[in-house]
Length: 404
Image 1 (tube, one colour):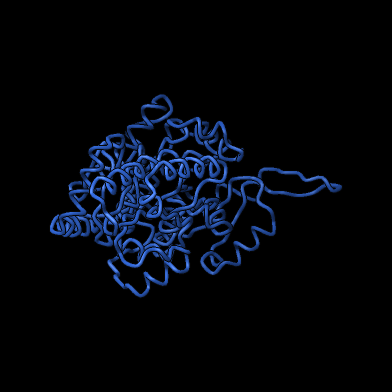
Image 2 (image 1 turned 180 degrees about the vertical axis):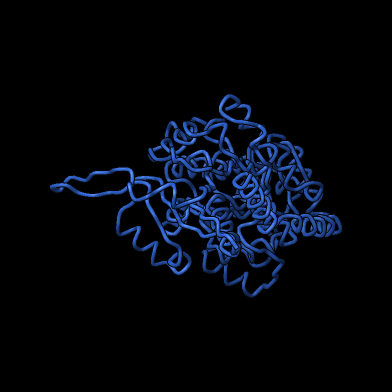
């Protein structure tokens, strides 16, 4: 059987292995698709790194990682020194004749290489919420998205994680993209999630994270990167009003997730402000965990009474799907891609409608039968998504285009 030689862009994997806070949705998309492609005997995979610079010691550590050490690697940019001065050139060792095509999970960022290229598109956050990036102290964030914008083109085939994502890109970049080259390709959860109740593990978890106030599984969970569009201050205010309205004493609001470095101070101040505005009773019931380790996420989902993800915008939205996989009832937004992900297996609300949010809390908190209904529907819905399905759509299209 002929082998197809694939260049697979791995910059996001390198960043995620070095810094856990970089393990956002796109990191897990990249990791899972690489695992799927590795199983496919039709492909010979070489990891390619496009962004410059990559410190040599960092690159060596990455190549020694058990998950990646068996893949050949190349760097598009090569660093060297002349008389103590660092220089960078495009790597002359990379020959287009050595590879058949290139695949990137951050598809807009592909530099000019003379190979058939396939990429994934996730969201238009930097263009819808430009103010976050204008204030960025991390210039590479701006550079990355400007690079994405520059390299979008009508020849490349793009796998869009939702219909919403596809429509958003066509709205912003209609002249640079070919709609016929944009394939809607839903993704899945960061790993396989199943319901795993274990109160002993939950208790130990809260002790490790300094949340010893919580003695049971009576908590509403929010788990995502902490950034403004996630709308967490709004959810805090609705939780506070809900608690005060019904004089509830046995329920906590647990907030997990790391934040982007360049907005972490702003977010912390915003959350502090909204927590301070809450009643004294409610203030004690809002628990901030910070970054939650990958191995603890499934257990945290599995015990939550309700999961909230009332985001203003998502390209796809993994967390609601993860929560549904664990049988947790979900409240999410009626915006962007989220209705595509959850279908009728979650309560969907306007992310700015406080009354609707409080009503959703009331319906789920006071009605165990309704929670059970959404739990079953969520588990069933989540089974519709898998990395095997995602990889199958991608590989079939790549081979169809390459061999025609």
